Image (cartoon, rainbow, N blue to C red):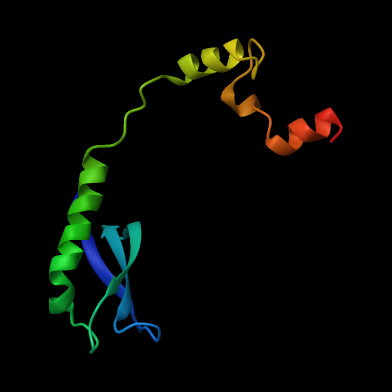
Length: 109
């Protein structure tokens, strides 16, 4: 997958000398990631000024796409741990976990 960069907005800041730059990193026509970063400059930065910074961000995004995080445990292993800890009943799944609000409501709090 080859990412392309589209600069969406350059906004001059009033609290410090520079600009917030918002970009979309796209694969084809689909937006993969949106990034907003600070760029120090007295004048509005040109695309050429932003080239190095955008290439760095693009490389990081591409690395994360190419090397996704692989969980150390499967969902079944995690559910077994939750059953052992008493947070799930046998036969329940992660989707059956209760929210903090549900637990408090059951306890009458």
